[in-house]
Length: 181
Image (tube, rainbow, N blue to C red; front, side, top):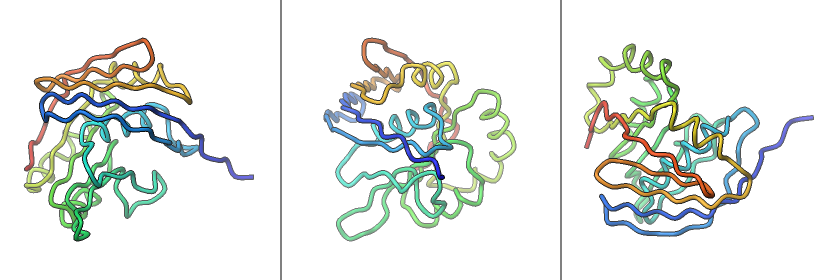
């Protein structure tokens, strides 16, 4: 018998002072059986950092032709492709060819640093790609706070990110490897 996805009910409040974007949304997120809570919460953070009209989650970890999250305009044009993790460079090239902007959030400590070292030369040619690395103490810290019903607040100010899950808050200063616009 196949394992089923675990559903997380999330009340997300975003206070992004850098973008002057303030919004609260209720979400139901499915965590694939092979997905960690760390990846689930990085996915949620990436969504929060780009929350805007038309932003939606893709079908998930098992679908290679879809983004983790993406935004289409009213004409169906793919404006934003968001990916998390350490994807194959070919996936990022395809995404950059399909979307106006692509943003990748890497995490995993040494693995993310090694991935960047191995892929940076090829990725530098992609002018619409932004690569942001999240520190492992941050991503592991938010994963440790995960529950199936969560009130999550994300605050962004001057590039700093604070993510509150319940009563605890974890802070990070992401490292931007590429700023692709």
